[in-house]
Length: 585
Image 1 (cartoon, helix red, strand yellow):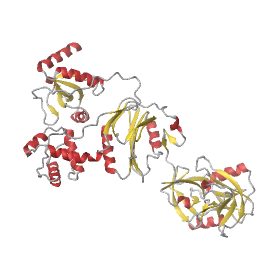
Image 2 (cartoon, helix red, strand yellow; image 1 turned 180 degrees about the horizontal axis):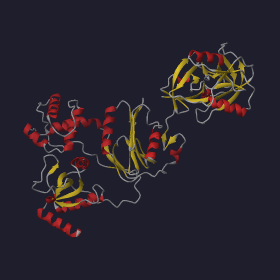
Image 3 (cartoon, one colour; image 1 turned 30 degrees about the vertical axis):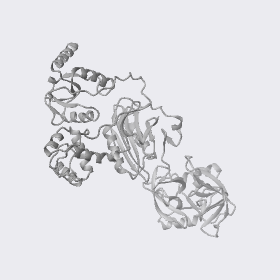
Image 4 (cartoon, helix red, strand yellow; image 1 turned 180 degrees about the vertical axis):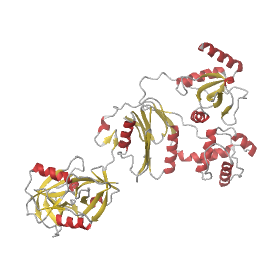
């Protein structure tokens, strides 16, 4: 029965010498128009018809039967149109609603442009080399630059489809003369905008753009994209089709869940395609991981729903925008990273990427990560955001207040405790070298410092707890030494001098006696612009720290100097009060 139907359609088509390629049907006009805009951006001769019963068809044509058959085979073989597309006689269609002003009264079939031969059968495994397609047309096709009367200009304007009319409104908005909606309807607002643009550019203000004027307007609008070579990229392995600035980024490698497109020239732009199987939980994990990456600055809006998320961030170097969606068990999206100070081009590129983004069922294999992408400071080959500096501090009250080195937090854009909790500077004493931090939400420390009352004996054993390796280790370590003097290098009574080989990351950590009482806070290795010898360190005296805390409104705990602990017990006690303090850009 199906074969007989095909024969009848073919016979009817041959009799009329006009056929269409039916490619899609939609149950509402809104859905049909949205689909039509997508097809019209990459195919010629796209039409929209009413099919009756509330359905709307999308068809290519009209063509002669021979041309239509060959074109149908080529387009299906290359995956440009659905596999179930078929030839249909024009009698199957009712009113035509796309392009605006078009009809079915064409006297002769449209002649097809030469089409490529069907592609070779695709391998079962998607290619590792994404396909870069021809640049999509962004403006009405160039026309001869002839003088047109307003009547002739209106007639040529009537040949524009809705997508082209909307694009002209977008260009008028960009030119600063139009501020109404983008609807493709040329009402009074659009006409006034056209007249304003004509006046600005030395044309008669008729309010109707001629063919040449439309080309000039679109040329101005698209000039910002010159040199970027925006093209559609088909990444079969990631299952994503999207426009990219192919003159400035090129495919580099896969590091699941990312396809990495790195800079190819001086403009330091980057694109990531995101592709992985998963569910809401997986997407939530990706949302958290993305925010730890260097390419996603912290400052900027975030939005998360059950079906996707967006992340936008800007710092002094880059602006980054990420969009991710979850559909049918596939997590797909992209990230655009662009240098700051080039916002107009970035915005235009981002808009084209958003409007062209399309997906297939393919996803990247989660195990596809190279050896280079598995370093401890990388996530799938991308650098984790790292602090400017990491030092030490220690808890001084039950709410989580922390004392640390004032130099270490003097210029931070953000301060964290143990990489998790945000904190702010509550008080600083640069002369003393101490700062008091308060967490933005109350914490419950395992231990709080107790400051030793009275002077310890010279040459007695001391230790400093801290993060000497910049936070590489997850727990603080103890470095042992001795108390050499209860004064600083210039006789200052608020400082102690230690015989102790401290590292830069130990600065801000607690100096404790053999019983675990806090004698003071370790200062940085560099003092007054000079680096101390390797086996010499300075610390703020406990009494000076207590006075500083009292002035800040915080009452500290005290101890008298207890019996010496075993080294392992001292390590546990000092480590419980010590916290990693990180300074971020």
